[in-house]
Length: 174
Image (cartoon, rainbow, N blue to C red):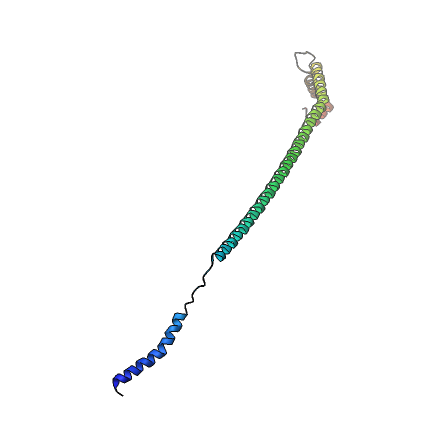
């Protein structure tokens, strides 16, 4: 066998082996089935129905959110109402405390005034009595008050009488 024959046999054998293998690669591509218009319409109807269902779910979720917003608004209004009532209560308590304090101050001032009136009368009477005693002790004498004159007279007497001098020394008048 010559070389050319060997080459032909080799080529035929290679073709026999490679052709079926290459056909498998080609057959790996699968052809799609033809879809009829009816099937397309049914698929579109299913898609539309799914979209409607999804839209309905979104509307339901929106309604839930609106309900939650309404609940939050109700809670907020309730909180504001409670806060205002608590604020009013605190204002009332503060006002009553201030009224009590002012009442106590008024009572203290009134009590002090009424307690001072007898003292003022007594002080006025003492001042008048002191003026009277002072006038009596002076006795309108140009040589001085009675007590000074009495001490001067006892000092003169002490010059002659030892007993009077001892007494005046005891009371630090000499």
